[in-house]
Image (cartoon, rainbow, N blue to C red; front, side, top):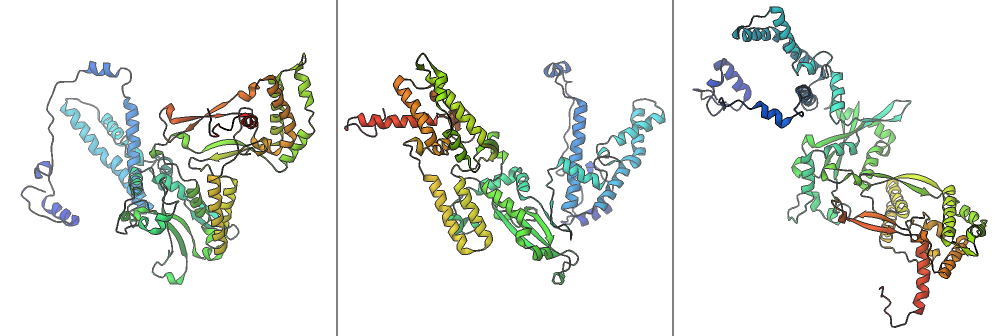
Length: 562
Protein backbone atom coordinates (compact mmCIF):
# COMPACT_ATOMS: atom_id res chain seq x y z
CA UNK A 1 0.00 0.00 0.00
CA UNK A 2 2.85 2.37 0.89
CA UNK A 3 5.76 3.19 -1.38
CA UNK A 4 8.86 1.12 -0.62
CA UNK A 5 6.95 -1.22 1.70
CA UNK A 6 6.22 -4.84 0.73
CA UNK A 7 4.44 -5.81 3.95
CA UNK A 8 1.24 -7.89 3.37
CA UNK A 9 -1.38 -9.15 5.81
CA UNK A 10 -4.99 -10.32 5.63
CA UNK A 11 -5.66 -9.39 9.27
CA UNK A 12 -6.70 -5.80 9.77
CA UNK A 13 -5.43 -5.53 13.37
CA UNK A 14 -1.98 -6.70 12.28
CA UNK A 15 -1.93 -4.23 9.40
CA UNK A 16 -3.07 -1.44 11.70
CA UNK A 17 -0.26 -2.20 14.13
CA UNK A 18 2.29 -2.18 11.29
CA UNK A 19 0.91 1.14 9.96
CA UNK A 20 1.16 2.81 13.37
CA UNK A 21 4.78 1.61 13.86
CA UNK A 22 6.24 2.15 10.40
CA UNK A 23 3.97 4.71 8.73
CA UNK A 24 2.56 6.79 11.56
CA UNK A 25 2.99 10.10 9.74
CA UNK A 26 1.94 9.76 6.12
CA UNK A 27 0.13 11.72 3.44
CA UNK A 28 -1.37 11.00 0.02
CA UNK A 29 2.01 11.11 -1.70
CA UNK A 30 3.24 8.18 0.46
CA UNK A 31 0.73 5.74 -1.08
CA UNK A 32 1.39 3.72 -4.21
CA UNK A 33 0.04 5.06 -7.48
CA UNK A 34 -2.61 2.36 -7.92
CA UNK A 35 -4.02 2.91 -4.41
CA UNK A 36 -5.01 6.56 -4.61
CA UNK A 37 -6.44 8.19 -7.71
CA UNK A 38 -6.15 11.96 -7.84
CA UNK A 39 -8.12 13.98 -10.35
CA UNK A 40 -6.69 17.38 -11.27
CA UNK A 41 -9.02 20.23 -12.06
CA UNK A 42 -7.72 22.72 -14.60
CA UNK A 43 -8.81 26.29 -14.84
CA UNK A 44 -11.43 26.85 -17.51
CA UNK A 45 -13.57 29.71 -18.58
CA UNK A 46 -15.86 31.17 -15.99
CA UNK A 47 -19.43 30.11 -16.61
CA UNK A 48 -21.84 32.63 -18.02
CA UNK A 49 -23.95 33.54 -15.01
CA UNK A 50 -26.46 35.44 -17.07
CA UNK A 51 -27.29 32.37 -19.15
CA UNK A 52 -27.65 30.32 -15.97
CA UNK A 53 -30.11 32.77 -14.49
CA UNK A 54 -32.08 32.97 -17.72
CA UNK A 55 -32.37 29.18 -17.98
CA UNK A 56 -33.73 28.79 -14.45
CA UNK A 57 -35.60 32.06 -14.08
CA UNK A 58 -37.52 32.23 -10.82
CA UNK A 59 -37.28 28.47 -10.22
CA UNK A 60 -33.71 28.46 -8.90
CA UNK A 61 -33.13 26.01 -6.05
CA UNK A 62 -33.35 27.53 -2.60
CA UNK A 63 -30.08 27.21 -0.71
CA UNK A 64 -31.88 27.21 2.63
CA UNK A 65 -34.17 24.34 1.59
CA UNK A 66 -31.19 22.39 0.29
CA UNK A 67 -29.36 22.79 3.60
CA UNK A 68 -32.41 21.65 5.53
CA UNK A 69 -32.72 18.62 3.28
CA UNK A 70 -29.03 17.84 3.80
CA UNK A 71 -29.42 18.03 7.57
CA UNK A 72 -32.36 15.63 7.46
CA UNK A 73 -30.36 13.29 5.21
CA UNK A 74 -27.50 13.30 7.74
CA UNK A 75 -29.99 12.52 10.50
CA UNK A 76 -31.40 9.59 8.54
CA UNK A 77 -27.93 8.19 7.79
CA UNK A 78 -26.80 8.57 11.39
CA UNK A 79 -30.03 7.04 12.70
CA UNK A 80 -29.55 4.07 10.36
CA UNK A 81 -26.05 3.55 11.76
CA UNK A 82 -27.31 3.69 15.35
CA UNK A 83 -30.14 1.29 14.53
CA UNK A 84 -27.66 -1.14 13.00
CA UNK A 85 -25.44 -0.92 16.10
CA UNK A 86 -28.39 -1.74 18.35
CA UNK A 87 -30.07 -4.53 16.38
CA UNK A 88 -27.28 -6.18 14.37
CA UNK A 89 -24.17 -5.67 16.51
CA UNK A 90 -26.19 -5.70 19.77
CA UNK A 91 -24.49 -2.65 21.25
CA UNK A 92 -26.27 -1.57 24.47
CA UNK A 93 -28.17 1.70 24.38
CA UNK A 94 -26.12 3.02 27.31
CA UNK A 95 -22.92 2.49 25.32
CA UNK A 96 -24.45 4.28 22.31
CA UNK A 97 -25.48 7.23 24.50
CA UNK A 98 -21.96 7.46 25.90
CA UNK A 99 -20.51 7.32 22.38
CA UNK A 100 -22.77 10.15 21.25
CA UNK A 101 -21.81 12.27 24.26
CA UNK A 102 -18.12 11.86 23.43
CA UNK A 103 -18.77 12.66 19.77
CA UNK A 104 -20.74 15.77 20.75
CA UNK A 105 -17.84 16.89 22.97
CA UNK A 106 -15.36 16.39 20.12
CA UNK A 107 -17.48 18.34 17.66
CA UNK A 108 -18.14 21.28 19.97
CA UNK A 109 -15.61 21.90 22.76
CA UNK A 110 -12.53 20.03 21.51
CA UNK A 111 -12.66 21.32 17.94
CA UNK A 112 -13.40 24.91 18.96
CA UNK A 113 -9.73 25.93 19.32
CA UNK A 114 -8.63 24.27 16.08
CA UNK A 115 -11.54 25.84 14.19
CA UNK A 116 -10.68 29.29 15.56
CA UNK A 117 -7.05 28.77 14.53
CA UNK A 118 -8.05 27.84 10.98
CA UNK A 119 -10.28 30.92 10.72
CA UNK A 120 -7.44 33.13 12.01
CA UNK A 121 -4.95 31.71 9.50
CA UNK A 122 -7.42 32.04 6.62
CA UNK A 123 -8.12 35.69 7.45
CA UNK A 124 -4.42 36.47 7.90
CA UNK A 125 -3.62 34.98 4.48
CA UNK A 126 -6.04 37.51 2.97
CA UNK A 127 -4.62 40.39 5.08
CA UNK A 128 -7.76 40.73 7.17
CA UNK A 129 -7.66 41.73 10.84
CA UNK A 130 -10.69 40.82 12.99
CA UNK A 131 -11.12 40.88 16.74
CA UNK A 132 -10.60 37.66 18.63
CA UNK A 133 -14.13 37.76 20.05
CA UNK A 134 -15.56 37.72 16.53
CA UNK A 135 -13.29 34.82 15.54
CA UNK A 136 -14.37 32.84 18.60
CA UNK A 137 -18.01 33.51 17.77
CA UNK A 138 -17.49 32.34 14.18
CA UNK A 139 -15.73 29.21 15.39
CA UNK A 140 -18.52 28.46 17.85
CA UNK A 141 -21.16 28.92 15.13
CA UNK A 142 -19.26 26.66 12.73
CA UNK A 143 -18.96 23.91 15.32
CA UNK A 144 -22.60 24.04 16.43
CA UNK A 145 -23.93 24.32 12.86
CA UNK A 146 -22.38 20.99 11.88
CA UNK A 147 -25.18 18.65 10.68
CA UNK A 148 -23.86 15.85 12.87
CA UNK A 149 -23.82 18.09 15.95
CA UNK A 150 -27.32 19.34 15.17
CA UNK A 151 -28.42 15.69 15.12
CA UNK A 152 -26.84 14.51 18.39
CA UNK A 153 -26.57 17.76 20.36
CA UNK A 154 -28.61 18.51 23.48
CA UNK A 155 -32.32 18.56 22.64
CA UNK A 156 -31.69 17.26 19.10
CA UNK A 157 -33.54 14.30 17.49
CA UNK A 158 -30.79 11.73 18.26
CA UNK A 159 -29.52 13.06 21.60
CA UNK A 160 -30.85 10.30 23.89
CA UNK A 161 -32.04 6.72 23.69
CA UNK A 162 -35.67 7.81 23.99
CA UNK A 163 -35.23 10.29 21.15
CA UNK A 164 -33.64 7.50 19.04
CA UNK A 165 -36.76 5.36 19.29
CA UNK A 166 -39.05 8.32 18.61
CA UNK A 167 -37.03 9.19 15.50
CA UNK A 168 -37.15 5.56 14.31
CA UNK A 169 -40.96 5.50 14.60
CA UNK A 170 -41.41 8.85 12.83
CA UNK A 171 -38.97 8.34 9.95
CA UNK A 172 -38.54 4.57 9.57
CA UNK A 173 -41.39 2.16 8.89
CA UNK A 174 -41.15 0.35 12.21
CA UNK A 175 -43.74 -2.35 12.92
CA UNK A 176 -44.59 -2.14 16.61
CA UNK A 177 -45.42 -5.30 18.61
CA UNK A 178 -48.95 -5.68 19.96
CA UNK A 179 -49.53 -6.89 23.51
CA UNK A 180 -52.35 -9.40 23.97
CA UNK A 181 -53.78 -10.00 27.45
CA UNK A 182 -54.36 -13.60 28.49
CA UNK A 183 -55.36 -12.94 32.11
CA UNK A 184 -55.61 -9.37 33.33
CA UNK A 185 -55.78 -10.38 36.98
CA UNK A 186 -52.60 -12.50 36.90
CA UNK A 187 -50.91 -10.11 34.40
CA UNK A 188 -50.43 -12.82 31.79
CA UNK A 189 -49.70 -11.38 28.35
CA UNK A 190 -47.79 -12.15 25.17
CA UNK A 191 -46.32 -10.01 22.38
CA UNK A 192 -47.17 -10.35 18.69
CA UNK A 193 -45.64 -8.57 15.71
CA UNK A 194 -48.21 -8.46 12.85
CA UNK A 195 -47.05 -10.62 9.95
CA UNK A 196 -49.11 -8.74 7.36
CA UNK A 197 -47.54 -5.38 8.23
CA UNK A 198 -44.04 -6.84 8.10
CA UNK A 199 -44.77 -8.41 4.70
CA UNK A 200 -46.11 -5.09 3.44
CA UNK A 201 -42.84 -3.36 4.39
CA UNK A 202 -40.73 -6.27 3.19
CA UNK A 203 -42.12 -6.18 -0.35
CA UNK A 204 -41.26 -2.50 -0.62
CA UNK A 205 -37.68 -3.68 -1.14
CA UNK A 206 -37.26 -4.17 -4.87
CA UNK A 207 -34.70 -6.92 -4.33
CA UNK A 208 -37.14 -9.04 -2.33
CA UNK A 209 -39.89 -8.48 -4.88
CA UNK A 210 -37.60 -9.35 -7.80
CA UNK A 211 -36.53 -12.61 -6.12
CA UNK A 212 -40.18 -13.49 -5.47
CA UNK A 213 -41.21 -12.83 -9.08
CA UNK A 214 -38.26 -14.84 -10.42
CA UNK A 215 -39.15 -17.79 -8.21
CA UNK A 216 -42.66 -17.78 -9.74
CA UNK A 217 -41.13 -18.69 -13.12
CA UNK A 218 -41.18 -22.44 -12.62
CA UNK A 219 -39.03 -24.65 -14.76
CA UNK A 220 -38.99 -28.40 -15.22
CA UNK A 221 -35.99 -29.42 -13.15
CA UNK A 222 -34.79 -32.93 -12.58
CA UNK A 223 -33.02 -32.10 -9.30
CA UNK A 224 -35.23 -31.71 -6.24
CA UNK A 225 -33.92 -28.41 -4.86
CA UNK A 226 -36.98 -26.83 -3.17
CA UNK A 227 -40.50 -27.57 -1.99
CA UNK A 228 -41.82 -26.30 -5.36
CA UNK A 229 -40.60 -29.49 -7.04
CA UNK A 230 -42.61 -31.73 -4.73
CA UNK A 231 -45.76 -33.55 -5.78
CA UNK A 232 -47.88 -31.94 -3.06
CA UNK A 233 -47.02 -28.44 -4.29
CA UNK A 234 -47.66 -29.24 -7.95
CA UNK A 235 -51.06 -30.80 -7.25
CA UNK A 236 -52.22 -27.95 -4.99
CA UNK A 237 -54.48 -25.64 -7.02
CA UNK A 238 -54.07 -22.72 -4.64
CA UNK A 239 -50.26 -22.80 -4.44
CA UNK A 240 -49.79 -23.24 -8.18
CA UNK A 241 -52.17 -20.47 -9.23
CA UNK A 242 -51.01 -17.90 -11.75
CA UNK A 243 -50.93 -15.04 -9.23
CA UNK A 244 -47.97 -14.29 -6.99
CA UNK A 245 -48.28 -16.43 -3.84
CA UNK A 246 -46.55 -15.64 -0.54
CA UNK A 247 -45.06 -18.73 1.12
CA UNK A 248 -44.20 -18.58 4.83
CA UNK A 249 -42.20 -21.09 6.86
CA UNK A 250 -43.03 -21.00 10.57
CA UNK A 251 -40.65 -22.07 13.37
CA UNK A 252 -41.25 -22.39 17.09
CA UNK A 253 -38.61 -22.78 19.79
CA UNK A 254 -38.20 -22.48 23.57
CA UNK A 255 -35.16 -20.88 25.15
CA UNK A 256 -33.97 -19.88 28.62
CA UNK A 257 -33.16 -16.18 28.86
CA UNK A 258 -31.29 -16.34 32.19
CA UNK A 259 -29.30 -19.51 31.57
CA UNK A 260 -29.19 -20.46 27.87
CA UNK A 261 -27.15 -23.60 28.60
CA UNK A 262 -29.49 -24.85 31.32
CA UNK A 263 -32.78 -25.06 29.46
CA UNK A 264 -33.76 -28.27 31.24
CA UNK A 265 -34.36 -26.32 34.46
CA UNK A 266 -37.33 -24.60 32.79
CA UNK A 267 -37.00 -21.36 34.75
CA UNK A 268 -37.94 -18.16 32.91
CA UNK A 269 -38.38 -20.19 29.75
CA UNK A 270 -39.65 -18.28 26.74
CA UNK A 271 -41.53 -19.62 23.68
CA UNK A 272 -40.76 -17.78 20.43
CA UNK A 273 -42.25 -18.09 16.93
CA UNK A 274 -40.26 -17.12 13.83
CA UNK A 275 -40.96 -17.12 10.11
CA UNK A 276 -39.11 -16.63 6.85
CA UNK A 277 -40.16 -15.93 3.28
CA UNK A 278 -39.91 -19.05 1.14
CA UNK A 279 -40.28 -16.99 -2.05
CA UNK A 280 -36.59 -16.11 -1.74
CA UNK A 281 -33.90 -18.34 -3.26
CA UNK A 282 -32.92 -21.39 -1.16
CA UNK A 283 -29.59 -19.82 -0.14
CA UNK A 284 -31.35 -16.97 1.67
CA UNK A 285 -33.52 -19.06 3.99
CA UNK A 286 -30.87 -19.77 6.62
CA UNK A 287 -29.56 -16.20 6.82
CA UNK A 288 -30.35 -14.49 10.12
CA UNK A 289 -31.39 -11.34 8.28
CA UNK A 290 -34.09 -13.35 6.47
CA UNK A 291 -35.63 -14.84 9.63
CA UNK A 292 -38.26 -12.64 11.25
CA UNK A 293 -39.58 -12.71 14.79
CA UNK A 294 -43.36 -12.66 15.25
CA UNK A 295 -44.48 -13.95 18.67
CA UNK A 296 -43.06 -14.13 22.20
CA UNK A 297 -44.67 -15.57 25.33
CA UNK A 298 -43.80 -17.59 28.41
CA UNK A 299 -43.65 -21.34 27.96
CA UNK A 300 -45.81 -21.95 31.02
CA UNK A 301 -48.52 -19.75 29.46
CA UNK A 302 -48.47 -21.98 26.38
CA UNK A 303 -49.08 -25.01 28.55
CA UNK A 304 -51.81 -23.24 30.54
CA UNK A 305 -53.77 -21.57 27.73
CA UNK A 306 -52.87 -23.78 24.76
CA UNK A 307 -51.51 -23.04 21.32
CA UNK A 308 -54.96 -22.13 19.96
CA UNK A 309 -55.16 -19.12 22.29
CA UNK A 310 -51.53 -18.05 21.87
CA UNK A 311 -51.41 -18.41 18.07
CA UNK A 312 -54.84 -16.85 17.46
CA UNK A 313 -53.55 -13.50 16.03
CA UNK A 314 -50.99 -15.32 13.87
CA UNK A 315 -53.59 -17.72 12.46
CA UNK A 316 -55.98 -14.82 11.83
CA UNK A 317 -53.34 -13.02 9.75
CA UNK A 318 -52.59 -16.26 7.90
CA UNK A 319 -56.27 -16.69 6.97
CA UNK A 320 -56.42 -13.06 5.84
CA UNK A 321 -53.30 -13.57 3.75
CA UNK A 322 -54.80 -16.67 2.09
CA UNK A 323 -58.27 -15.26 1.42
CA UNK A 324 -57.55 -11.60 0.71
CA UNK A 325 -53.79 -11.29 0.12
CA UNK A 326 -51.78 -8.07 0.38
CA UNK A 327 -51.45 -5.16 -2.00
CA UNK A 328 -48.00 -4.63 -3.59
CA UNK A 329 -47.69 -1.17 -5.09
CA UNK A 330 -44.49 -1.97 -7.03
CA UNK A 331 -46.38 -4.34 -9.32
CA UNK A 332 -47.96 -1.30 -10.92
CA UNK A 333 -51.61 -2.05 -10.17
CA UNK A 334 -53.77 1.11 -10.23
CA UNK A 335 -55.44 2.54 -7.15
CA UNK A 336 -58.80 1.18 -8.30
CA UNK A 337 -57.56 -2.32 -7.42
CA UNK A 338 -57.23 -1.38 -3.76
CA UNK A 339 -59.94 -2.58 -1.35
CA UNK A 340 -63.13 -0.59 -2.01
CA UNK A 341 -66.16 0.07 0.17
CA UNK A 342 -69.70 -0.39 -1.18
CA UNK A 343 -73.18 0.11 0.24
CA UNK A 344 -75.53 -2.87 -0.24
CA UNK A 345 -79.06 -3.67 0.87
CA UNK A 346 -79.53 -6.13 3.71
CA UNK A 347 -82.75 -8.13 3.99
CA UNK A 348 -83.49 -8.80 7.68
CA UNK A 349 -85.57 -11.74 8.81
CA UNK A 350 -89.22 -11.26 7.94
CA UNK A 351 -88.58 -8.84 5.08
CA UNK A 352 -90.33 -11.03 2.51
CA UNK A 353 -93.47 -11.42 4.64
CA UNK A 354 -93.52 -7.67 5.39
CA UNK A 355 -93.32 -6.81 1.70
CA UNK A 356 -96.00 -9.34 0.84
CA UNK A 357 -98.30 -7.83 3.47
CA UNK A 358 -97.68 -4.29 2.23
CA UNK A 359 -98.36 -5.15 -1.40
CA UNK A 360 -101.33 -7.34 -0.52
CA UNK A 361 -103.11 -4.45 1.20
CA UNK A 362 -102.19 -1.82 -1.41
CA UNK A 363 -105.01 -0.27 -3.38
CA UNK A 364 -103.46 -0.38 -6.84
CA UNK A 365 -106.53 1.18 -8.46
CA UNK A 366 -105.70 4.60 -7.08
CA UNK A 367 -102.61 4.76 -9.32
CA UNK A 368 -104.76 4.21 -12.40
CA UNK A 369 -107.30 6.83 -11.27
CA UNK A 370 -104.61 9.48 -10.80
CA UNK A 371 -103.18 9.12 -14.32
CA UNK A 372 -106.45 8.55 -16.22
CA UNK A 373 -107.57 11.54 -18.22
CA UNK A 374 -110.06 11.78 -21.10
CA UNK A 375 -110.59 8.02 -20.86
CA UNK A 376 -106.94 7.49 -21.78
CA UNK A 377 -104.29 6.42 -19.26
CA UNK A 378 -100.78 7.85 -19.50
CA UNK A 379 -98.71 4.68 -19.35
CA UNK A 380 -95.42 6.47 -18.57
CA UNK A 381 -96.82 8.26 -15.52
CA UNK A 382 -98.73 5.16 -14.48
CA UNK A 383 -95.67 2.89 -14.58
CA UNK A 384 -93.33 5.43 -12.99
CA UNK A 385 -95.66 6.01 -10.04
CA UNK A 386 -95.97 2.29 -9.36
CA UNK A 387 -92.21 1.73 -9.57
CA UNK A 388 -91.59 4.68 -7.23
CA UNK A 389 -94.04 3.26 -4.72
CA UNK A 390 -92.41 -0.19 -4.82
CA UNK A 391 -88.91 1.33 -4.41
CA UNK A 392 -90.04 3.48 -1.45
CA UNK A 393 -91.63 0.46 0.21
CA UNK A 394 -88.45 -1.58 -0.22
CA UNK A 395 -86.28 1.20 1.26
CA UNK A 396 -88.56 1.53 4.29
CA UNK A 397 -88.29 -2.16 5.18
CA UNK A 398 -84.76 -3.13 4.13
CA UNK A 399 -81.56 -1.80 5.69
CA UNK A 400 -78.19 -0.80 4.24
CA UNK A 401 -74.80 -2.25 5.07
CA UNK A 402 -71.24 -1.19 4.28
CA UNK A 403 -69.02 -3.96 2.90
CA UNK A 404 -65.40 -4.06 1.72
CA UNK A 405 -64.49 -5.79 -1.53
CA UNK A 406 -60.96 -6.81 -2.49
CA UNK A 407 -59.36 -7.02 -5.93
CA UNK A 408 -58.69 -10.76 -5.64
CA UNK A 409 -62.18 -11.63 -4.39
CA UNK A 410 -63.64 -14.34 -6.59
CA UNK A 411 -66.99 -13.63 -8.26
CA UNK A 412 -68.31 -17.05 -7.33
CA UNK A 413 -67.68 -16.51 -3.59
CA UNK A 414 -71.34 -16.31 -2.54
CA UNK A 415 -73.02 -16.84 0.81
CA UNK A 416 -73.30 -20.62 0.40
CA UNK A 417 -69.58 -20.96 -0.32
CA UNK A 418 -68.70 -18.76 2.68
CA UNK A 419 -70.78 -20.98 4.96
CA UNK A 420 -69.09 -24.11 3.59
CA UNK A 421 -65.68 -22.49 4.05
CA UNK A 422 -66.54 -21.58 7.62
CA UNK A 423 -67.68 -25.15 8.28
CA UNK A 424 -64.40 -26.51 6.91
CA UNK A 425 -62.35 -24.19 9.16
CA UNK A 426 -64.42 -25.20 12.18
CA UNK A 427 -63.87 -28.88 11.42
CA UNK A 428 -60.13 -28.26 11.03
CA UNK A 429 -59.89 -26.56 14.44
CA UNK A 430 -61.90 -29.33 16.10
CA UNK A 431 -59.35 -31.97 15.08
CA UNK A 432 -62.02 -34.38 13.81
CA UNK A 433 -60.48 -35.98 10.70
CA UNK A 434 -63.78 -37.42 9.44
CA UNK A 435 -65.65 -34.12 9.79
CA UNK A 436 -62.79 -32.26 8.13
CA UNK A 437 -62.76 -34.66 5.17
CA UNK A 438 -66.54 -34.34 4.74
CA UNK A 439 -66.46 -30.54 4.97
CA UNK A 440 -63.66 -30.36 2.40
CA UNK A 441 -65.67 -32.46 -0.04
CA UNK A 442 -68.75 -30.29 0.52
CA UNK A 443 -66.68 -27.16 -0.07
CA UNK A 444 -65.32 -28.50 -3.37
CA UNK A 445 -68.82 -29.37 -4.57
CA UNK A 446 -70.12 -25.96 -3.47
CA UNK A 447 -67.36 -24.10 -5.33
CA UNK A 448 -67.94 -26.18 -8.45
CA UNK A 449 -71.68 -25.51 -8.29
CA UNK A 450 -71.14 -21.77 -7.77
CA UNK A 451 -68.70 -21.58 -10.69
CA UNK A 452 -70.66 -23.48 -13.31
CA UNK A 453 -74.35 -23.06 -12.36
CA UNK A 454 -76.62 -21.18 -14.79
CA UNK A 455 -79.94 -19.45 -14.29
CA UNK A 456 -82.80 -19.81 -16.73
CA UNK A 457 -85.37 -17.06 -16.71
CA UNK A 458 -88.74 -18.00 -18.24
CA UNK A 459 -91.01 -15.90 -16.07
CA UNK A 460 -90.99 -13.39 -13.25
CA UNK A 461 -91.24 -16.19 -10.69
CA UNK A 462 -87.88 -17.60 -11.80
CA UNK A 463 -85.85 -14.38 -11.76
CA UNK A 464 -82.58 -14.79 -9.89
CA UNK A 465 -82.54 -12.83 -6.60
CA UNK A 466 -78.84 -12.03 -7.17
CA UNK A 467 -79.51 -10.34 -10.51
CA UNK A 468 -78.21 -6.76 -10.70
CA UNK A 469 -80.98 -4.18 -10.54
CA UNK A 470 -81.56 -1.83 -13.44
CA UNK A 471 -82.07 1.95 -13.36
CA UNK A 472 -85.41 1.53 -11.53
CA UNK A 473 -83.60 -0.01 -8.53
CA UNK A 474 -86.02 -2.94 -8.15
CA UNK A 475 -84.10 -6.11 -7.26
CA UNK A 476 -84.86 -9.59 -8.45
CA UNK A 477 -85.21 -10.69 -4.84
CA UNK A 478 -88.30 -8.53 -4.41
CA UNK A 479 -89.88 -9.72 -7.67
CA UNK A 480 -89.29 -13.36 -6.82
CA UNK A 481 -90.48 -13.15 -3.21
CA UNK A 482 -93.56 -11.01 -3.97
CA UNK A 483 -94.50 -12.44 -7.35
CA UNK A 484 -98.00 -13.36 -6.19
CA UNK A 485 -98.73 -9.86 -4.90
CA UNK A 486 -97.15 -8.01 -7.87
CA UNK A 487 -98.23 -10.30 -10.72
CA UNK A 488 -101.63 -8.63 -11.06
CA UNK A 489 -100.40 -5.05 -11.34
CA UNK A 490 -97.62 -5.94 -13.78
CA UNK A 491 -100.11 -7.95 -15.87
CA UNK A 492 -102.16 -4.77 -16.13
CA UNK A 493 -99.08 -2.79 -17.22
CA UNK A 494 -98.00 -5.41 -19.79
CA UNK A 495 -101.51 -5.66 -21.28
CA UNK A 496 -101.81 -1.88 -21.48
CA UNK A 497 -98.44 -1.70 -23.21
CA UNK A 498 -99.49 -4.30 -25.79
CA UNK A 499 -102.85 -2.58 -26.36
CA UNK A 500 -101.29 0.84 -26.94
CA UNK A 501 -98.19 -0.56 -28.72
CA UNK A 502 -96.05 1.61 -26.43
CA UNK A 503 -93.23 0.54 -24.12
CA UNK A 504 -92.98 2.64 -20.91
CA UNK A 505 -90.03 5.03 -21.00
CA UNK A 506 -88.73 3.87 -17.62
CA UNK A 507 -88.51 0.32 -19.01
CA UNK A 508 -86.34 1.53 -21.90
CA UNK A 509 -83.91 3.41 -19.65
CA UNK A 510 -80.53 1.70 -19.16
CA UNK A 511 -77.42 2.16 -17.08
CA UNK A 512 -74.00 1.58 -18.67
CA UNK A 513 -71.30 0.16 -16.38
CA UNK A 514 -67.67 -0.13 -17.47
CA UNK A 515 -66.02 -3.45 -16.60
CA UNK A 516 -62.26 -3.99 -16.84
CA UNK A 517 -61.13 -6.50 -19.45
CA UNK A 518 -57.74 -6.88 -17.74
CA UNK A 519 -55.57 -5.16 -15.16
CA UNK A 520 -53.67 -1.92 -15.77
CA UNK A 521 -56.05 -0.17 -18.21
CA UNK A 522 -54.41 2.44 -20.42
CA UNK A 523 -57.20 3.32 -22.87
CA UNK A 524 -60.96 3.08 -23.29
CA UNK A 525 -60.66 -0.18 -25.25
CA UNK A 526 -59.50 -1.85 -22.03
CA UNK A 527 -63.05 -1.50 -20.65
CA UNK A 528 -66.12 -3.51 -21.65
CA UNK A 529 -69.40 -1.57 -21.50
CA UNK A 530 -72.17 -3.57 -19.83
CA UNK A 531 -75.75 -2.34 -20.07
CA UNK A 532 -78.08 -2.87 -17.09
CA UNK A 533 -81.76 -2.87 -18.03
CA UNK A 534 -84.89 -3.24 -15.99
CA UNK A 535 -85.45 -6.76 -14.66
CA UNK A 536 -89.18 -6.29 -15.12
CA UNK A 537 -88.68 -5.48 -18.80
CA UNK A 538 -86.57 -8.62 -19.22
CA UNK A 539 -89.41 -10.71 -17.85
CA UNK A 540 -91.84 -8.94 -20.15
CA UNK A 541 -89.61 -9.62 -23.17
CA UNK A 542 -89.40 -13.32 -22.32
CA UNK A 543 -93.16 -13.54 -22.04
CA UNK A 544 -93.56 -11.90 -25.47
CA UNK A 545 -90.85 -14.17 -26.91
CA UNK A 546 -92.80 -17.26 -25.84
CA UNK A 547 -95.86 -16.04 -27.80
CA UNK A 548 -93.79 -15.10 -30.85
CA UNK A 549 -92.20 -18.54 -31.06
CA UNK A 550 -95.63 -20.16 -31.31
CA UNK A 551 -96.33 -18.09 -34.45
CA UNK A 552 -93.06 -18.93 -36.21
CA UNK A 553 -92.93 -21.68 -38.88
CA UNK A 554 -91.25 -24.95 -37.87
CA UNK A 555 -88.66 -24.53 -40.64
CA UNK A 556 -86.97 -21.68 -38.78
CA UNK A 557 -83.74 -22.61 -37.05
CA UNK A 558 -84.27 -22.42 -33.25
CA UNK A 559 -80.80 -20.86 -32.88
CA UNK A 560 -81.66 -18.00 -35.25
CA UNK A 561 -81.28 -14.62 -33.54
CA UNK A 562 -81.34 -12.07 -36.40
